[in-house]
Amino acid sequence: MESALTPNERTTLDTLLAADFPGAAELRAQAPTARVTGRCGCGCPTIDLAVAEATPRAQVESRVAVEAEVPDGGLIVFVEDGRLSGLEYWTTADDPPAAFPPPEEIRAAG
Image 1 (tube, rainbow, N blue to C red):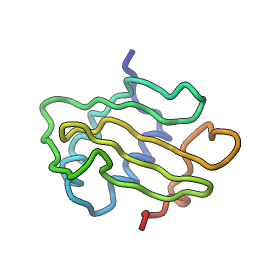
Image 2: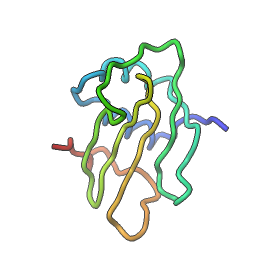
Image 3: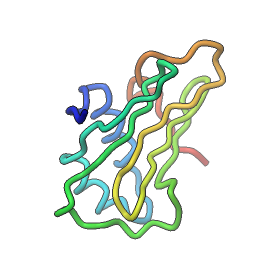
Image 4: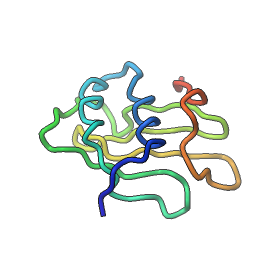
């Protein structure tokens, strides 16, 4: 069942897409139409995404469009066929986080 992104999910996605990387402009155009189509079963905030077909496709080199570092882990924006497909939060902590971190804790990877 599809649902709207929560404010926390929207802020995290927008923060990651603010970076400059190949395909960023198209992904930023897709972001307002993004809907949650699935959630990770472990309790972490990782989500599957779908966007409107009418939005422009991004020309990206791999499924990983952009990554960022956060305390005890990282965030990844995934793309399939040029469209946003997921927002993942991976962690090295023993317990999965319940929500995405605040924007001030998100640092560009690399």
